[in-house]
Image (tube, rainbow, N blue to C red; front, side):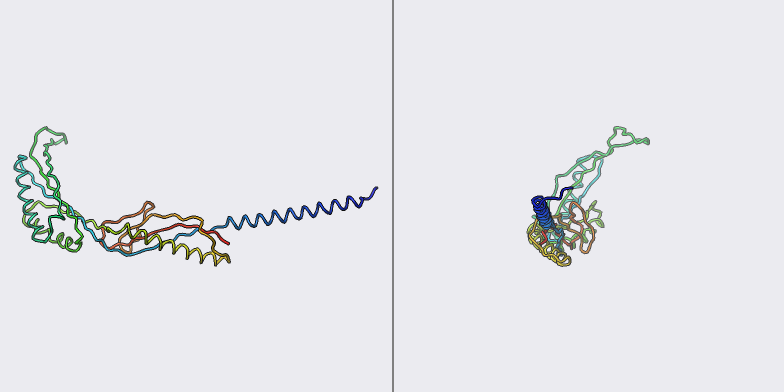
Length: 244
């Protein structure tokens, strides 16, 4: 049996060196790739209390008579009383919108629920709407509207809507606050894993939630409460950062 030559031994030595070097380079590249790919995703939020600065209140008057003309005259009389009620309580004309009058026939039905074709009378309706920045004053007006009913005025008032008109301006400020909160959260999480927070990779604005004060109601599509005067507005930002 022949023994390996010195030339062959030398060739095997260099091959081994090349394999070790290639493995080290590949391993180093994998480590660098892992570091580059490591990110941390966080959600930041900001919340502020707000008080509505615009109130909307709607309602109507209606009258039912045998003829359309009589129903219209009755509604006109009630509308004049409503106008005096608004004026006596300091509501300016600029805050009041009287909608066009609507009229409906009152049709007779038989015992089987079918129309007989006979018109029993007419119902005429006058709708109104008040939009005012004087939220407290209109709230007091709503409470006093029972006076109309006690006088026999066929009046119906619906629940008030409460809006906040400076929401667009506040959103910009709150997005900044939510982003700051996201960064602080990311720093804490990175430090807890013995890493250092790197550059911002991605940031996306979430939906805004405008909810009744101290409420837990939320929606994936955003929530805008109009039933409460006092509300909370919450902004959310989702961000991802590189880890070093």
